[in-house]
Length: 251
Image (cartoon, rainbow, N blue to C red; front, side, top):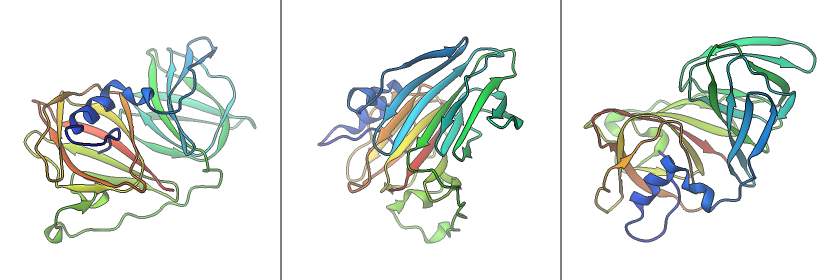
């Protein structure tokens, strides 16, 4: 699981809160929120750097976006969705997805439309260099009995690799109550999208558990790890399982 970067002792707790309150905005280069270009459609830039652009996209019931372009991106629904996408050439397709049903989309120019009678919201993580088609990579199988802490994050049993290509690795991360992760190491910059839960906690390698922090479903966080890997473990600290999507960005 990913959190905002911190230096020195006692900062892991602040890192957890930073995910769920989007404090990342205070330290990262971000763009000003873009105004709605069509009624009922809005895009808010949550985070941006030289690698990625993370946006929160909101559609009112039956709203449409203008025609617009993307580089390759991971999309994380934070509400259930039923949408239609229409390309410049007039081709269209419909899709129904549940909360957390992540998917990758290659570079495209299209118009989106919400087909539901209720608003929808998604988080889009655009990879700026992703202008070539995705080349999927099959995840490696791991013998859990041979794991020795700390493990690479993609081998930690609660972190399930659900998609990987030459640009990103996506981990669906789920912590039942009373079942924390093994100590694991993050070596790539990563973006988190919280999906559900009430409280969470973390323990940096060689230190004590943090106090519990509130989980805010739909909140986004970023943590730098390329060139400065970090090792920790995470778990639920409340009465509900903690569920989060973790998107690693490959250099």
